[in-house]
Amino acid sequence: MKEIKHYINGEYVGSANGRLFDNVNPANGKVISRVHEAGREEVDAAVKAARAALNGPWGRMTVEQRTAILHKVADGINARFDEFLEAECQDTGKPKSLASHIDIPRGAANFKVFADLIKNVAAEAFEMATDDGTGALNYAVRRPKGVIGVISPWNLPLLLMTWKVGPALACGNTVVVKPSEETPTTTALLGEVMKEAGVPDGVYNVVHGFGGNSAGAFLTEHPDVDAYTFTGETGTGETIMKAAANGVRQVSLELGGKNAGIVFADCDMDKAIEGTLRSAFANCGQVCLGTERVYVQRPIFDEFVARLKAGAEELVIGPPDDERSNFGPLISLKHREKVLSYYQKAVDDGANVITGGGVPDMPAELAHGAWVQPTIWTGLQDDSAVVTEEIFGPCCHIRPFDTEEEAIELANSLPYGLASALWTENVTRAHRVAGQLEAGIVWVNSWFLRDLRTAFGGSKQSGIGREGGVHSLEFYTELKNICVKL
Ligand SMILES: NC(=O)c1ccc[n+]([C@@H]2O[C@H](COP(=O)([O-])OP(=O)(O)OC[C@H]3O[C@@H](n4cnc5c(N)ncnc54)[C@H](O)[C@@H]3O)[C@@H](O)[C@H]2O)c1
Ligand SMILES: O=C/C=C/C=C(\O)C(=O)O
Image 1 (cartoon, rainbow, N blue to C red):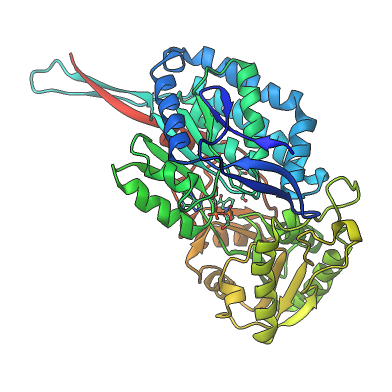
Image 2: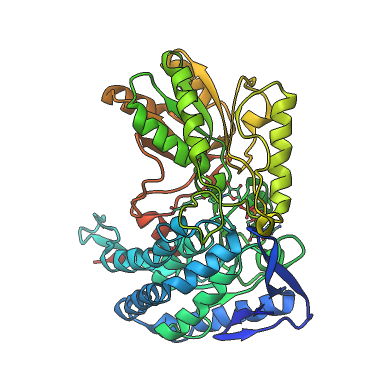
């Protein structure tokens, strides 16, 4: 059986404690590899390697040298595209048709975009007057923040990890990555690409394991990490923030959501249906930006529900290699238990189950997979847990509204604020509503349309800080002001 090891100081190493855990393909329940679980010893070795590399060749490279290497990393991912694709789809069960368009290309793009950005970004300068008339000049320079702890989730493993590692390395930092225990493979494979691209040893380190009382906690408790960037659940974000408070380390947190879609009667119905289908069901509903609450203006409510139902029922459930498949399994049987508990709760709370609500019949070879049906409900009260809590599954609740004010109030009613999608052909309304939604990202007549130069992150309990474009540079560098008396 294949073993997945830590990548520390340019070498793949096993755990001294001898502990390994199973990596399961959620499409069929088969164990695909055994993963080493880091103890404090491996985490400490990884942090030490990262510190040494920061003070070593990486820290002394020019921006041009560093960014040329990062372009080679991106090229290296593309050169081994099929290997990354296979690994990502085995770990997650997601359709290859999805991962080949989103996960792997974005893995490469995340290095190119930030390598190019860092070469062109300016820092501020201010001339000032002084009493003696000679004046002074202030100018700022950017310096790497140091050793960055990167903790990433399982839903878009390579994409979300490189979304952090790309800018961190472009800014001259070194990293210790703790990928999700569910999806260790592409993060491990990236070590080989780093080596081939000429990234010095110790710049990119990977430790595997779980969260609490395992690699995740050991990394966030390590005193020699300068800052943490985390994507995952809001509750985990709180725990990481507390750990980072020791030593006053900065955090960037991209957390959970319960995102609203708002569909006005003046929308282009075809676009609204296509976009809402993707936002509710892509990646089996396991996208932080996904829509789990849909508010539809009353005159088009029945038509919208009927068309979304028809679209959901046309989704092709199947394994990654099936070219027709556009709907894979959940990440694990454990996560399916959680999702199915909400399916049951919806019924208990009196929902109309418009479609789905259970587990699909699958052929024998897939019977042990974490399959679940795409599900749509109507008729729930606004305070049902199904409508207020993040489920992170392929499901949404649709509720009618009458006025614009009501839609805004409903959308803003929860403590989350990650993303919203609104659908209207009235341009004035689009701007007016978008400006009032409490969310870090608002899409108008689209969903998950990403320009990597833009600010990305959540408001309220959906996160702290923004990444993307210059905002990533803000987090991954220290801006130092130098004041020169003339
Ligand atoms: N806002 C965003 O950009 C964004 C993007 C993707 C996913 N998400 C969110 O992520 C969640 C799904 O991902 P998940 O289930 O992997 O999240 P999770 O919080 O369970 O785990 C994420 C990572 O944190 C680690 N971890 C868990 N407990 C830890 C601890 N005590 N200390 C240190 N590390 C710990 C895990 O091992 C994993 O690597 C959803 O809530 C989703 O909304 C948010
Ligand atoms: O599941 C969450 C998706 C997050 C997407 C990004 O962070 C991105 O597109 O950069």
